[in-house]
Length: 169
Image (cartoon, rainbow, N blue to C red):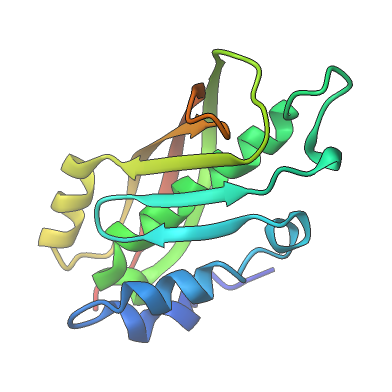
């Protein structure tokens, strides 16, 4: 079990301070979660406003009806949301000791076909408040992700309620 005092995002911390290197953050974050690497999730964009993740069109991503499985959509949304957190909170990543999803909600709108693209953002009000302080604190932050299929059709919406512990610099 990881110690609460160690930075969860240690490998990223040096690229978030000063002027964040978002491409380096994207490159490292893209390889951080073994399951997402195994499935083929790719982070294509990571910045202070949003993150974009893609899951390739592969037969094993489909359900028995030939559309993309709901679990694959959830994975894309989850990884995009966590990546959006990394991008927005880059200046304070060294202090993050905990970041977990507490609750999630999903709305499936249409059958998803082919490659999936998830676009995620974080609650700007909460992020701006945390970034304006240098406190040790526990805070809740919401993320949202929209999933689009190969035809750029919105197929699902996700929201995640996350909890984060962060230490002062």
